[in-house]
Image (cartoon, rainbow, N blue to C red; front, side, top):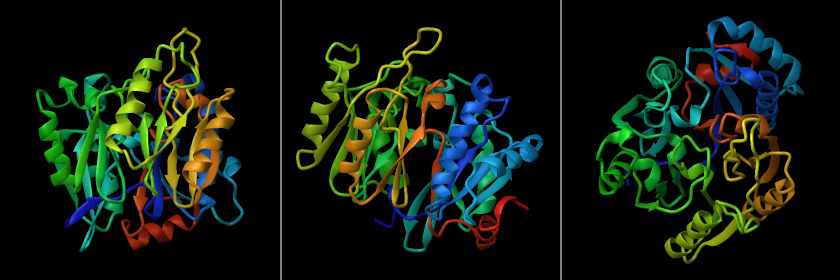
Length: 355
């Protein structure tokens, strides 16, 4: 295959985030959410990885002040503030994807329409072409189909996963068939095999069942699954148990790691889609959301078994799930060899503004 989407455990030089401010849906929880962002940025920097932080122009000074007060220095801060305008901070679903080719990296962007026209995403959909492309040393190839990064999971052999519930929402690509999606993922992302799961969904999930809340690969033929075996009376049990069985059928040779399911409701009594599977693999570590729930410790222990070569780092995901997402949803990795030399140089200058 001449090109292939890189798995998340490929070496990374940066993580893209977008700063939460009062113009986003984070306004009611802004201080708590920013603390989570600072915790995440500190962890990313501690493994020598930079952060490209999208920030609105009128928020730059405030963001700098918050970061300089809350992000661990230790001479290793690498945060480059990049001025941009966006609808919200779910970078996983509108940030570019990166394939490796024989000539270097190939940047891929699909279109983003707010998970099937549920929310206005017109500004988010312009971020790659108007902002991020300028930071990269390779051109970006654009596809007209609506596909979110959180809907895709791939391993080192090119086996790509997604979910039928998400892909078949007609507000994304009309009557685009699963066979057409499989061909798209083969052509655009170099997938050698595509498996589309039909089971499993979390209540309150605006994404129609993104794979990154349900099933994740490990580098050593493992599958981490957001299961519900700890809650046999839960409304999720039947669907998630069926998902586990579906995974067994598709991956009979893989070791399965079943995560417990927490039960969290917001102040309006809505079940929140809290998933321990929504973690970010970042170089030598796995940044795992925890939710101040009894299941947190068990989830961390299971991930330690699933990723024995990685350090497991707990990130406070409770503020994030108030807006129905978590750690993976707010982040997008940039593999080593993607960014321009001057961007790398600026990243190494502490907390600074891209110029």
